[in-house]
Length: 130
Length: 183
Image (cartoon, rainbow over all chains, first blue to last red; front, side, top):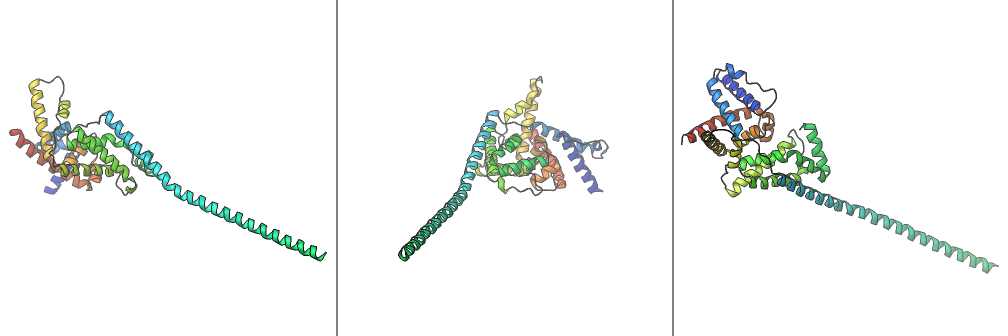
């Protein structure tokens, strides 16, 4: 019995606070029929006073804008860093590509020289035979 | 903000650092307000808000959605920044009289205004004397207008535990407030 009364008080106070804060769907009708009417009224009055002294405070537009700019600068720096981090891998790819290209070109040159040498030899052999 | 919308914004920012600006736009006011209510002065609120967002930006890749929304993750960073600030500097929180002045309605009688302002000051001081988690609960509920389930996610508790903590917080606050109002 005592526990359910306490739960009732907690629920009523929570609903009252929700109503003060503008939370939709809150309902304090139960307050009217509660056996602990006086006690609850005292606490809800206090809650209303608390709500009054804790009114929301906004930052100054200057501060808000300055911090926003600082965060944007930080974001830009990080974005550039991210790009730099990505660059080595693309450099690596470029180097590998260049190495493969050079190797292919070198191999082509070697093949060309070998063919030339082979052609030279066969020409000499045919000249000797004639 | 819808959970799905938040998830998409976070994913974009994790892949493209420049997209973090959208998250900042959504949460800047809320994070600043939370820290302001915990520190009581604009200068430190600005400093800690900047630290919170710089840290969130630096560690964004570590955030993985596992039932905890990004906003809860961000509030936890802000909460830790405030806790460190209190620990490192061992400062007592300052009650912002500017904020109190703003709450007083125009057209009231001067003596009523003075009394009302004095009551607000005593209440705000009583709130500042509460343990950190109780202050956090009141700020998230009344200043940030969050639901119990959202507060539970930020504070790593169940919704039932939050309701219970809220009740105990009001009881403790009423005792302290009445005791100091009598002085």
